[in-house]
Amino acid sequence: MAKPSAAVSGKGPITHVIFDMDGLLLDTEKFYTEVQEIILARYNKTFDWSLKAKMMGKKAIEAARVFVEETGISDSLTAEDFLVEREAMLQKLFPTSELMPGASRLIKHLHEKAIPFCLATGSHRRHFELKTQSHRELFSLMHHVVSGDDPEIKQGKPSPDIFLAAAKRFEGGPIDPIKYLVFEDAPSGVHAAKNAGMSVVMVPDSRLDSSFHDAADQVLGSLLDFNPSDWGLPPFDNPAS
Ligand SMILES: O=P(O)(O)OC[C@H](O)CO
Ligand SMILES: [Mg+2]
Image 1: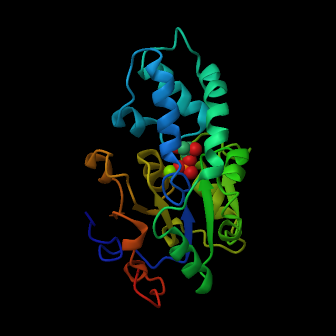
Image 2: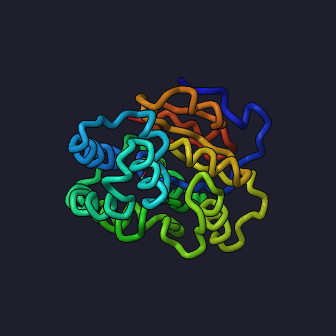
């Protein structure tokens, strides 16, 4: 599944890394899917991956509008009421969030090699806190965290707002977006990174249609497959186990 690396196709070396969270570092997209399936079942409708692809990575209200409009239930359930309804269910699930394979290894590696990195999630700050409550030590290694409710983020992914804000908050970070490497799982996030002028490694769910891979510079089956040398980053000291 791996596409030839962008480093091979002539991109400059990377100095800073920006991570997405849901579906990339944390296995949390399944919670959204589960809750949305439950809500749609009430309307005798099923949730599928073409709708998932349009929602994932977006700010909550933007994803909610897509949900009620695309499923044709907006006359019965507003986007705002959908968010209220799913909130109670999500709040129970988020504290059980688990890391995606290779997430811990990559974060610790970048930290050890003194490569600056941060988090840019469309998720609300209070959800970030719930999702990461069992992974505090690892997420504390982020230089900073930008969440979807940050006042500087006027529009969610695929707008570049969140990645441009994330880049700006590295003190002394490069102005040139080509120095930043973004890790994303969602089509909207890949487009946001490209709209910011950055390079992007996509680690998509295998159920996502492969046509969504085309916009990424590199596509991996798992973070365990990432080769830092492809991007001019220091190599792992040990192979993935
Ligand atoms: O993938 P993230 O971390 O930008 O989060 C976005 C939403 O919360 C879930 O799709
Ligand atoms: Mg994501």
